[in-house]
Length: 520
Ligand SMILES: Cc1cc2nc3c(=O)[nH]c(=O)nc-3n(C[C@H](O)[C@H](O)[C@H](O)COP(=O)(O)OP(=O)(O)OC[C@H]3O[C@@H](n4cnc5c(N)ncnc54)[C@H](O)[C@@H]3O)c2cc1C
Ligand SMILES: *[C@@H]1O[C@H](CO)[C@@H](O)[C@H](O)[C@H]1NC(C)=O
Ligand SMILES: *[C@@H]1O[C@H](CO)[C@@H](O)[C@H](O)[C@H]1NC(C)=O
Ligand SMILES: *[C@@H]1O[C@H](CO)[C@@H](O)[C@H](O)[C@H]1NC(C)=O
Ligand SMILES: *[C@@H]1O[C@H](CO)[C@@H](O)[C@H](O)[C@H]1NC(C)=O
Image (cartoon, rainbow, N blue to C red; front, top):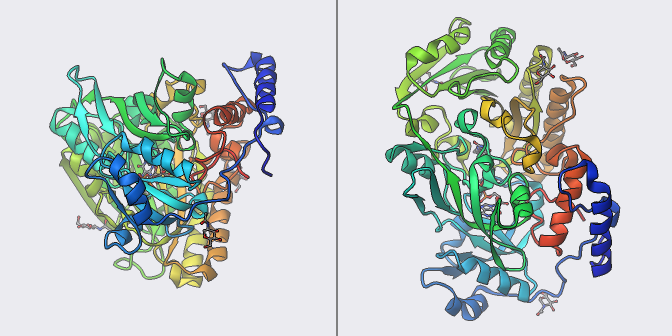
């Protein structure tokens, strides 16, 4: 239901929250019943690209491009990983300078036209399908500069993983990025951001020092522990709901090692139980050391091995030389694989060597991905078998789903667990394993229901396999229609605080197309 925001209601909500906030950290909350939001009025101007060019063009930097569906660049600009519930873009504005962003937002607001930020276009959330309006494309804002102190670097809002990995490594540093070469820094980072250096240095969001942010109103603000600290808290975990990051400063770290060691194994299903027993030992219920950066794998159909039975592909990547890595890798070496690949390589080559490079099939655009996810502490062996069998059954029943996969990731959580749980909006520091199913198929609406059913069943099996634990949904791995508590945290003060901050910083709920906190 849409209720109108009134100053009185707002003040009341703040007072009430202040009165009940004693048990919880500095909450300027907004209990569900008191929270009200208005939405963008419906009298939108029907803006064409040429009209936007005429009005806005002269105000923006010279290299900024504005175009619509009749332009040859349009198809590329709307191309995305997630075809299921794709946003509609009427006009594309490719911003060439950071301060263009605020001008575009103000102009869109004046014309009551929704806007949505796009960087590397791998966002999977379902609410994106509700969007129609102006695309603010931040891809050109890709600068990365290491600060003279060698402890921090400044990234523009369109920086992305492989770029960040390369730029830092070449100059003797590493940073927290996502694992996949193709995704943006901020897409993952505003929701936490998992990656290979998290065991040593924490999540992407844990390393943020400050951000330059354009708010829903178009106003530009600096967000840090000193400036708008409440917003800083929110944007480290729930950031997509609050603003557009035009640049950010992040901690960086000396690179320490010259090479990483990886090994990729392929197993047939008869090894499944032994494999997951071994994986539980290696992970040690979340005690995998920082250097043993990640142990991850897939169930997927690989016709070079079998046309009917998914293979189990697994990979380990260690931050250092092979001799230090081998003791950790040992439990997988003797299970009886059917294929193996390995190498000592510079960190920059690790994404591609482990099938997560920017040009690898995982990053490809254009397919439907019905994604469901869970957070786990240990693998339940019986559950893993059920999920595997269900995978084969569905592929058999629906050959259209042949490109589907289940990905299971055990990053080291050593440094992640050291960060105070209440220090940011990221609420999932107790999860040791991230699992996700993607039912993958060429867009075909008649298959959606079946895809949702299989994906949901798989997620439920994962969760039923951990009796007594509450479901968790990593914001960047689900469709965003899961329970808000499973995404943003079960402690009531978390959602109260987030709703209060939405009220304060985005009272018209303009940022509502990626896992919205306010659902109307
Ligand atoms: C192949 C693949 C690999 C992945 N690997 C990882 C991984 O290793 N670690 C991990 O944590 N997650 C990973 N994810 C999930 C990933 O975090 C999300 O898909 C993320 O949304 C992708 O960001 P993007 O820039 O590629 O996509 P986009 O669709 O361009 O952006 C995603 C969302 O972030 C918003 N956004 C982007 N840039 C900004 C900005 N500057 N300011 C404000 N909002 C912004 C967009 O508006 C959108 O809502 C992966 C996903 C895929 C498909
Ligand atoms: C926009 O177009 C629709 C129909 O396409 C029309 O009903 C509406 O009045 C137009 N709005 C404005 C502000 O011109
Ligand atoms: C894993 O560790 C958590 C504490 O971090 C504990 O609560 C849980 O019981 C452990 N699980 C297993 C299976 O040992
Ligand atoms: C199998 O091993 C070969 C040789 O190491 C490698 O080139 C190939 O990519 C491997 N296949 C898979 C699916 O891992
Ligand atoms: C594994 O999952 C089943 C439900 O599928 C559950 O009954 C069992 O207790 C789980 N085992 C453990 C060790 O949690």
